[in-house]
Length: 203
Image (cartoon, rainbow, N blue to C red; front, side, top):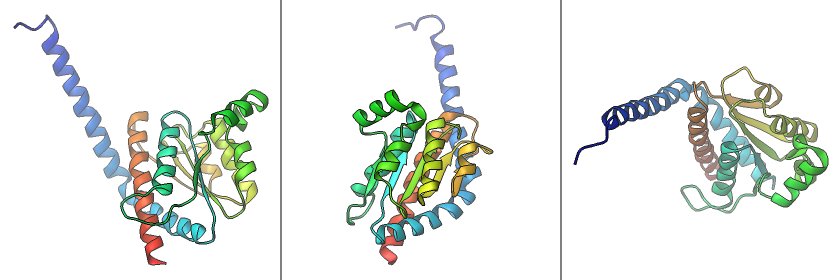
């Protein structure tokens, strides 16, 4: 059976794009590895201490970052690799009734921040994710957390960016595309789970 005209060219072009995609991720992993490990381990230790004091973790983001924020919360309330007690972790975008009511009444910048003010307490922690590092609703949430005495950590795209500057600490991923930044954020989510579980086990 003969392929339609142009099919071979399309297959070759797609293959090249896939090679580029995987190559970009590999390069980002190598470029960000050392700095990320240096930061993630202290986050895990501090989060373990927060949980020992009956604190909670909140997460938020938009789009793909929302999915990864929710992924982190799920790993903690369920389990990552080994059995442990369930850990309080709340993704602020998951309550659709509250989220849409807040946006309708107060505007998009208050989408997550108002919920954090309702549920958060001093001594809790917040992980915020944004590939741009400039999402107004995520920045507003980090600022609200700071005012409340909540520890804030950010996973962002390349520096400098506003979100990284308003958080207690941030890992700003050096990568050329949003897709690669998001893939790196998932690696970092799992790295945080690894560091947290190890720190909890050591207590």
